[in-house]
Length: 432
Image (cartoon, rainbow, N blue to C red; front, side):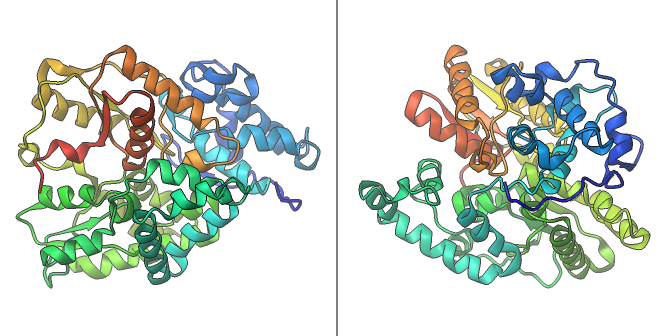
């Protein structure tokens, strides 16, 4: 944690079921009923009140009321804030739909918690600040990794250094065959910038750099429409999670302007394959709540944002494997994904029939949005609990709503239970 801290603002705006609230008002809605506690993966692991949604709310309330001070409780605040997976399961369980993940983000920023390794944060931050440089560096890193550079660094024990230790985890989860989506598409000579597009595709970072098959299959789902692929444009999600509100708002504004420019008067639908990205884009009106004019434009934008499983059911007529026992992982980030999960369940039931395991296969959320890299998060324990549940139910496939969650779980399955495989939901579609 950095030495400099700032006051937790009670006037910070939070989403709510009946509109925007202040942080102070949102926290006060907590009745301490305990409904959220058993849904929280960090509490289930540690069994301590401070690591439960209710405990986090009470810590924030005490800070807002001045009964405790950030400077005097740095260790407690760092532990309780960094241990949250931002999965929003507590919000789904809460009768008042309290956005605890948003409360935790406010706490992280006020306490100046450095949740990500410094070099990783600087690297991903380039995507919003200098996307061309990020693309160059990412392409170079992927090429070197395919040549076994990280394996060489591991042998030399360089990755054991504290500021490079995260490279070990990155090497475990990233597929070695990965290439930038733009390079793969260029080989196919596909036109992705038509003058009169019918729909806009906004690929997630994992689709662009970690698993290009996600992007290719999404493009297949969007056929025969004229697709404009909006890549190299940050949404503000990364800065919202790990940076500052000011920069997150700036990047969100740029994306909003870009959508308006491409859409014109037709107001085209923007489709994304990233669950975390989708939930954040739907959150845009709250970001602009202090500027009524921009908020109205953000509301118009949010209405036109879709996740891929919201596409018409006819596009999902692919060749799914109906001979293996399958489950759905509905992990989410920031906000509940209940509606998206239910829509995806219907698709899985249609394609897989009795082989689809309708119940939630695990009590533990798979880390998404890079949360496994957050310092202090018990991500390894959570992922291992998921592997245990997959083995216990003898599952062969787990379809994930988040591409990053699929990478995390699949890497653990390869090591501990290779009989099963985790994949993004777009893999239900036939190979492009």
